[in-house]
Picture 1 (cartoon, rainbow, N blue to C red):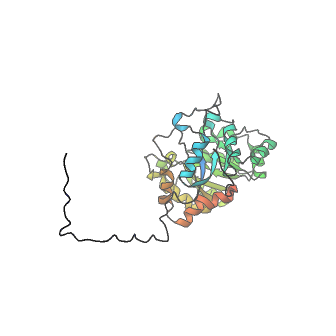
Picture 2 (cartoon, rainbow, N blue to C red):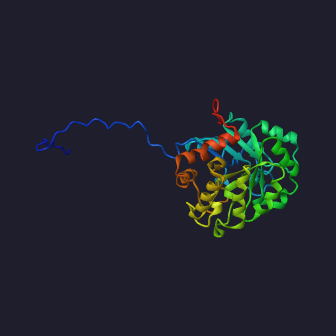
Picture 3 (tube, rainbow, N blue to C red):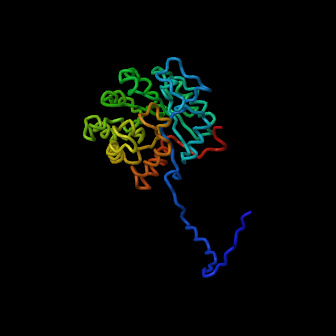
Length: 311
């Protein structure tokens, strides 16, 4: 058996252990520690809520998740509240999965529902009582013509202090804006209006979006930048649009959303990369606080959740 010989500490300088460095009073804070309200995301859980047979698209396994998984994901990245948007994909006007999530969230979550254009006012009131703050108008998927008969719906939303959550692409805002104006409804614009990257900030449709800021009724989600970009993460060609929107609408009328689970995205996107990008897009902490927290908390009436949330 091999033996080991202990060598004397000849010629070595003996030193006592130094006391640990004092911990600074202000700990390092990252974007993940900053309080956030994720204002655009989806829950797709076909194991508990099967997809509608006539849905536009059946999200695949990596786009699905349970209520527990979504809640844990929010918690891991400091998203204390969320506005969960009912998807046309998977569920269309079947809002059971969304409403179940809200019912068990103890006030932590609010929702936007996909509804029939001719939904009754009484049914809108029932949805509002369960945490729904607005309804979707998915022109990017369905086309602008699908919403030409929504005058009554938009007036009901306005009178109930709810929102029209509008997703457009290309030039659709030019068609949609006249439909939205007469009702006086407050409007959430998804994904920066989905401008076409090659056209730039001076394009007719993007200038129209910027002009709508003056009404005070429009709010823009800084979200879905992959849908506004011809490049890969961090989607640099979309940054000028974000800068212009923040300038026109100000952080008091801009919100942030992750767009999780990134349906049919052209590249892999991890949730943590999206809030990390916000720190570059909005470097001023006070402005970032408004976009991530103050503005959506004010618009949607979020309060700190009471008791445990979805499990």
